[in-house]
Image: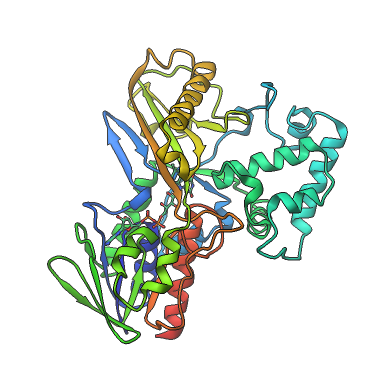
Length: 430
Ligand SMILES: Cc1cc2nc3c(=O)[nH]c(=O)nc-3n(C[C@H](O)[C@H](O)[C@H](O)COP(=O)(O)OP(=O)(O)OC[C@H]3O[C@@H](n4cnc5c(N)ncnc54)[C@H](O)[C@@H]3O)c2cc1C
């Protein structure tokens, strides 16, 4: 069996390390930070547990995540939100419920007229039945425009895509990616779930499984250089140690890879991907000493491009007794990073939604946490965007995994799917 070094201990690195170790490979996992998890880290403070990034799990019964967890025999518990507590605020400021059940479809103001409702049903059936693959150059907007559905139907579809792909420009995504994603989601029994205890529980469970499978886990070990002999990667190096192996799986983001591959033959292959834009969002969490509202689990504002989730409604372990935890996400673009006025406007949009839906939150505030430019997905799914391949033929013993890779799904499922694909490819090749 082969010696494998995995660089990066986010969920892609953890998954690929585990999958290869249970197949008998000798695996070392190096993570530059003091703990594993990457953007699936969970922060604990004053009895509150806050996910840094990953929150919900979409279509878990059809996800790559579930495949990975099953293969590793890792079990976590899931909680399911109540649909009757989901609220939408339409572009015209009207509050309404979702359209996903028959009763919801009949009553929702998202689809006010009979034609809107009929077209929405037609859209769902078309996506389910769609067997062709629009080329990568066809955007979701172009695909929609050819359908002739009512404006309300198209706007709702765009809004759903915006929230599932965490983007302000849903029309710009590749139609093939969006349709593939919804074909899976529309067949699911579990559209949205939350991990009981937060994503830290998943990271810890994966860690325990890796240890059982004999993976050597090295935290605070940043890889700083790669040594090639022609097209074969021979070793990677931290400040203190050199790690030799037969196979290397690089699960660090493209910006980190750019530094790592400098002056190596991999450089011209990898560096262009570091210039691709990530999907970013402003995250504004509030931890409250008491519950200020109990009847809304999720509210999505179509005009402000903000949604708020109340994970403490499903999972009492993320708050101290009587507390409430609200997590708001406002989409931004990577360009907004340099524009304080845009970021301030996004923060104000979140606060005004909190004011409207959770009056009293300011008085009950224990603390808040704002991340202006959280990277939701390492490289977005825009039509013009190129995602990092998981393997280049020229470098037979080097693989890549992470949510910036050209794998299936959205957000963390891309990380799981790339890990699965790489582990399968390594299994066949070595
Ligand atoms: C605000 C927000 C909301 C999100 N919501 C959801 C959601 O609802 N559902 C969902 O499924 N996903 C969600 N995500 C996405 C999810 O968090 C990510 O897709 C996932 O965590 C990415 O995992 P990864 O392993 O691909 O990358 P990362 O987590 O970025 O892991 C990369 C790792 O590599 C390490 N590293 C970098 N350089 C080196 C080096 N030189 N040497 C060693 N290690 C190195 C880093 O420290 C890091 O640990 C969200 C993300 C954010 C930010």
